[in-house]
Length: 70
Length: 451
Image 1 (cartoon, each protein chain N blue to C red):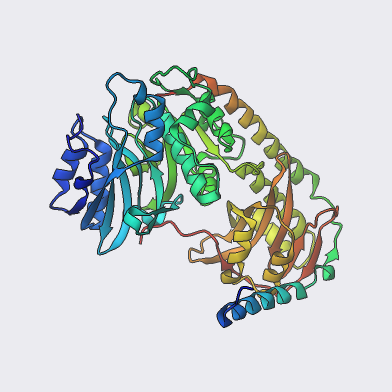
Image 2 (image 1 turned 45 degrees about the vertical axis):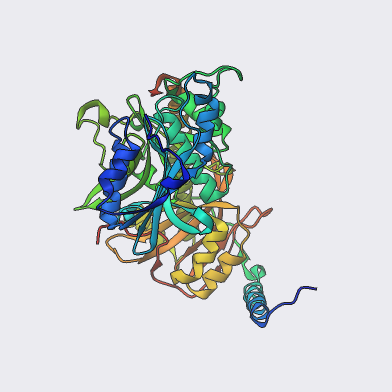
C-alpha cells in the first residue's frame, strides 16, 4: 500500500476543508425570481443586434472562397 | 548549400552573444538572408541574451513532416536532420529555434516576447524542451517560417495557431502535413507537389479539420453596433489568436496594447518574426499591404457563441436583472446612460473559478459563483466604471454559457452590487439573493498601457 507523507495528508485535509466551506453555502437559499421581460423596445433593439451578428458571419463566410494567401 | 558539417555531433557547442551573432547567422542562412533569423537575434539583443547552445543533430517532428512529404522525393534531397539553438541570459532560458537545412532556415521556434512587448502579448503557451537530459521551459508564441515549397504563409499561420491550441488547450499536435491534409489540398499519397498557397475557404477547412472551427469577420461588413477593434480585443483578451488576411498574405494577431492613447497590435508574421508591432489599421495607410480583408478566429470546439453575441446578451441580462430590483436599478440606468465600460473574454470556467477569490468580489459572491454549475467555456462580460483605470474598476459581471445557442445565449450567473443571480440547469427562471454590496472589485483583464 502506498505510504502518504504528513505533507500530503495536510494537503488533502486542506482541500477537503475548502470544499466543505463551499458546499456549506447552499444554493437552495436563493429565491426564484420571475421578472417582467425587459421593456419591449430595449429588448427588440438588442435582439436585432444579435440577429445581425449571424447575418454578418454568413456574409463573411460567403467571401472566403474569393481570398487567397500565398 | 548547408554547411558540410551539418547536423554532426561535433557541431554541438556553446556560443557567446553578442560576439558570435554574425557567425551563427552566417551558418544558418548560408543560402539566403533570413529576415526571420535576424529578427530572432534582434529579440535576443533586447533580452541581453549572453549564451547560445547548439544541439546537433536534432530530429524535429515538424521538419520531418516536410521532409517526408516533399523533400524525400527529390533527386537530391537536403539532410533529414536539423540543429537546435537554445538561448539563455544569466542561466535563464529564453527559448529555442530549430534550424532547418533549407532556404528558409527558421523552423519551429519559441522565444519569450521581447521585454518591450511582453505585457501586450496575449497568446503565449508553455514550451518544454529536454536537450541532453536537461529540462527547460519558456512561455512563448510558437513560430515557424514557411519553407516556401511545401508550406506557404497560410500553412505557417495555421500551424502556429494549431500548435498554440495544442500547448494551451490540449488540442492535437499537428504537423504541416496535417495542415495540408486538413485543408483538402493534399496530392495523391504517392505524388508530391509544391504549394502555391491556399484560398481562405481552404484555410477555414483546415482549421475545422484540426478541431478549431473558425469564426469569420469581414472588417468592411461588421454587424450593427460592432467595431473591429472591440471584436479582435475580445478574442485576444481570451487568449485566442486571430488569423488576419491581407492581400495574398496570412498572419496572426497575438496581442494588443496602447501607446500614447493609440492602439497597436502585436502580430506574428512568418515572413518577419513572431512579435511584430503593428499600428492600428485605418484602411488607407500604406496602400494594399494594410488592407485587412478578413479575420478568422479559430476557437476550441465547444465555443458556439461569438464574443459579440455573448456581450449583447450580457447587456440584456444586466438590464433585465439589475433593472427589475429597486436596489440595483441604478446599475441598469448607468448602462443605458453609457456610464459603464464593457469588456468581455472567454475562459475555462474552472480557471475562472480558481481566480475568483483573488479579485475582491466578497466571500458571498465567490461562494455563489463557485457553487453554480457552469459550462466548460464561459464568456464573461465585465461592466466597469468609466474613468477608473486601476485594477479595481468592475461594478458587476455576467457569465454566458459559451456552448449555448448563438441566437439565444444562456446566462449562467451574474453579480451586481448587493445581488447575485444564478440560472440553474433545468430551471426556467433565475434564482437570486441579496449579498453584502461590494462597490468595485478587480478586473480579470490586465491593463495594456506601457509602464
